[in-house]
Structure formats: structure tokens, C-alpha cells
Amino acid sequence: MSRPKAAAQPGEPPKLPRKPASSLAEKWTHIDGVNVFYRESPVPPEGARVMAHVHGFGLSGRYLLPTAEKLADEFHTYVPDLPGFGRSGKRKDMLDIPDLARATIDFFDDRGVEKATLVGNSMGCPVIIECAHAYPERIERAVLVSPAGGVHNQPLRRAIGQLSKDAPREPTRMARVAVPDYVRFGVPSTARMFRSLTQYPSLQRLLELRIPTLVVLGQRDPLLPHAHRVDEIASQTDSHVLVVLLEGAAHAINFSHPDQLAHIIRAFMDDKPIENDPEWPGHVRIYEVHRGKHHPPAQA
Image (cartoon, rainbow, N blue to C red; front, side, top):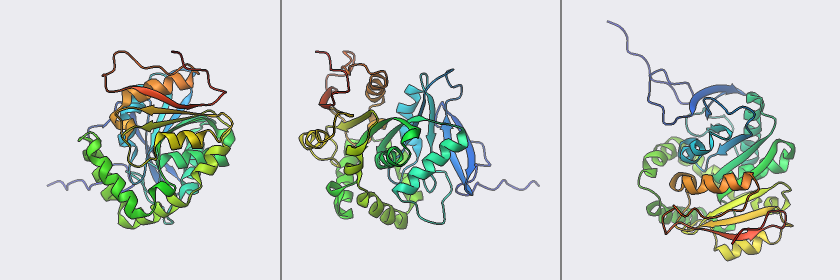
């Protein structure tokens, strides 16, 4: 009688066959003693710009796939699970925002990527901001979708309440992706990572950025302040930030509105005006909240 195959341990390549969750190729690499899981364009377009998608708090990159897949025909796409998240292995020391930024750059080094555009959601946005702050030569552009952290999400009980309000506003299928990731991440990691997230100076760093930066906000997102406050904040910068409000969207825009988000990102990457698509449902519309003077004006 043959012995049954053992299941893979966390952070190890799976030993049993499984159905891929994406059209992107599933791969593993080993960085600083940790097995890192990531997804990549199976056949990257020749000469394509590199675009990496950075996940949020406690999650893996899986919920970012709907948007990443829609952009993979134009960009050399990566969707990593950062160390300590998703299927990647954990580090002995708990990662904070600067550590996760360093881990992102280490992933680029491992993959031979010199420069990339980063698309993040929630906690992924402070990670991207830190990448652009600490390693500006490595980041081409930044796309910040539903940025999290700061005083609006403090203390932890307030953030939990905001997440509770957000959950019913997301597609029901989001729970099938998010719940296993949260369980795997664990309560101790949640408390430590939240402390790091809310202590990170996201606003100060954002206003210091000198690369083209797109911020996409969901009109129904309870984790973010009102759009007028965002405009007030964005106006403090000297024009590198473009802020767009997506009507009908909540926090996990990368998962819930991939068509609209991919449309916005493509226009931003090509320095084109961001316009609504007449084929979208009537309740889904894009509104500019703030446009820096270095961005081309929107068309009527």
C-alpha cells in the first residue's frame, strides 16, 4: 500500500495538485530564507512595463487578481504574497511597513526587475509609499487604491467597526477569498501589524512623493474620510497626485470593480484623460476629486 502524500506546510510549495485560481502563472521563489509565492504573466508582452500588485492587511494577493488579470495583456504583471501573508512563509521577526517595502524591493531584485509601477490596495498603499520614499529609483508610478492607515482608522476597535460596515458592501464572493487569508494571518499578527500601519506617516510621505501618483477612492468606503477632506489633503502637494472617486465602490475596489479600475489605471499610465465608459452600469461613474497640474486635464 502506497503512503498518502503529505500536505504542504505553510510557506512551502504545495505537494498536491490544485486548480489554479488565476490565468496568471503560479510560482515560488526563495528570498532571505523564506518561501515566497507569487503570480506572474504567463507570457509577458515583449518590452512591457512591469506592474506589481500589493495586497492589503492580513490578505494574500488573490483578491487582487480580477484587476491584475485585466492588465496582464499590456503589462508584465506580478502579484506576490508578501512574507507573512497568504501562502508565503513567515519571518521570525514580525514585518512592519518599512520591512514590507524592503521585502517588495527584495522580490524585484530576485526577479531581476529594475523599475516597476506598483498598484496597491488598503495596507498595500503605505507599503508602496514607503517603497517610493526609500527606493525612489525603483518605482516608476504609484497607484494607491483605498489607502488605509492613519488617524481615521484608529484605534483598532474603530477600524474593526469600519471593516464590519464595509463587509456587506463588498461582493459576497469576497468572503470566500478573504476569510481563509485572515484566519491564516492570525490574531497576534493582526494586532502587531495594525500598530505598525497606524503609526506609519502615510500622509507626510504621500505629500513628499515626486513620482506620478494616482489615488482611487470608493464612494462607499467606510475606512476613508470624505472626498472633500481628501481633496483638501491632496491640494497640499505640488501636483504629482491625481485623485479619482469611483461611485458605487467600497474598499476592495481591485476585487469588486476590476473593469473600472483597470480602465482608470490604463489611462493614468498613458497620461490620458480619465473618462467614463458609456457601457458601464448607470450607478458606476468616475469623478475627479483632485488633479495636479502635471496631469493632463480631463475632457468634458
